[in-house]
Length: 83
Image 1: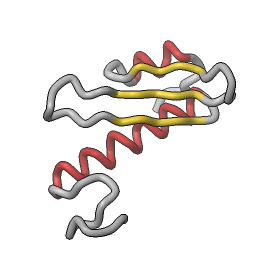
Image 2: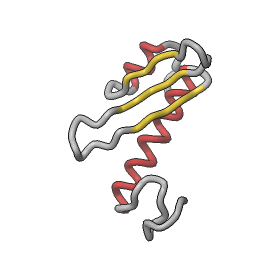
Image 3: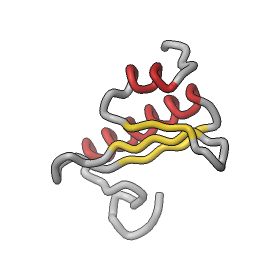
Image 4: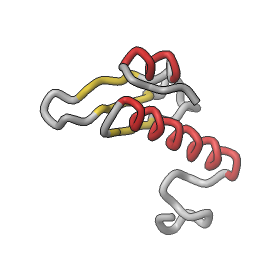
């Protein structure tokens, strides 16, 4: 895994994401918007560029797992409650 120290590092690692440093909250933010109906919109926040990259990785992994199992994000496999 690469050391992520700058916005450019995150953008290289995650080209489908738009990332920025918050001007008032001191946090780092990212969003992957859906370009098609088949692509889920995701968001991530971190306390550093490295933390943001790690959160993006977790979001992408969770989405991939949910797509594989057919469950919706935030819902249990039966679709009735949160995980």
